[in-house]
Length: 268
Image (cartoon, rainbow, N blue to C red; front, side):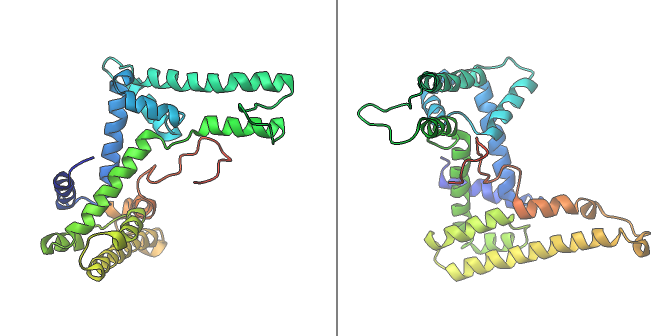
């Protein structure tokens, strides 16, 4: 986990660049790319902790499995052992769990645990084992790392807002996407911020200003679809208004998503 000083520096740099959009989404995207590239490049056997987490989680989530595969197939350098090793490790777990299931189904008996009698019918018990095997008992290791980093950054942001200079910088920024804004508001009551009212007022005021700005861009873009305004040129900002609005509402692709491995798996 990054230190408080490095987090403060990373956040300050992101806001001082003055680029459009949510800075925290940009940091999420960069870290996600770095993590998937690192896994593609490295030998998984050299990181026993990651290998252990991977087995417990029954592999990476759908998104990060594909991200690592894409990074591997598009690389122009020699491919490391990370991706094949990941697949082999998880497939071995599936094989070990599914082989007894096949035997129990053929015999017409459920899969009994040692010392326990079967309380469920064979099909229900089989489905339960299948679900647990595919879903795993832990979160995707990449998702876990991203969520931990994201929480640490937002916590640092709240503390930085007590600085007058940074508060002024934040007030002039594009603020946060709605998911990151909600996260900041959720973390605020438990933070060490001295002025809760001052901080949440700044958060809400800046967020409302950003949403109004995006709304104005969308209105201008839609207005210029009409015949009466056909001669008015469309600015680059207006042309990209739909994407800007989407990113403001939901953030970057994959942000905080529930990466289900089965279509009927309930949200946790």
